Amino acid sequence: MKLEQLFDVRGSISIVTGAASGLGLAMAEVMADNGASVAMFDVDAGGLETAAAKLRARGSSVATTAVDVRDSDALRRAIDDVATRNGRLDVVFANAGISAGPGHLTEVGNLTAVQLPSWQNVLDINLTSVFVTMQAAAAHMKPRKSGRIIVTSSIAGLRSEVICGYAYVATKAAVANLVRHAAVELAPYNICVNAIAPGTFLTNIAGGKLRDPEIARQTATLSPM
Image (cartoon, rainbow, N blue to C red; front, top):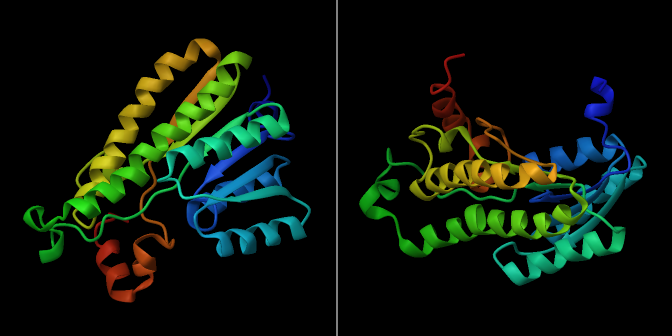
């Protein structure tokens, strides 16, 4: 198979969660620009429509759904609706995620200071919603024996990253192994399951704090180059 065929997304039906900004928007954008029909999910309805309008203005095929991924039933319905409306589901990118607050270099981020409500909220978004997204996608892909599922993990899920909060590193490590597990099950159905593990990007995560010059400086010291 030629390279351009292997990575050809023209006409594919795709879903991206957390698509209003940051990495999710970048992934939705590159797929839409290359001919995919992209359903963009996000809890930020206003940001979602603004992002989608820019993509539509240059001829991309995108649709939007405002959904809180913590609501598992609503998330499943949204995925089912895309698959039903289009007759199939080719690509699902489970990207939605949030920060867990600062890492243990700060007093509020150390082990004994972590509050369970905050911990649970991060688990609901970063882990449970990813599982539900994968589960709902697989239900549509398995009968057709075709599909691609991608999940956003993090380098913080592969090693200790002191600037990241406990719940964040725990959930990102969990989704990495969740992907390994699902990849083995779904491979016989010709469904490829992968995770990406990005480093630091200037996105809106952590309330956009990475744009603060001092925090950016501290983050930069963790990178060899």
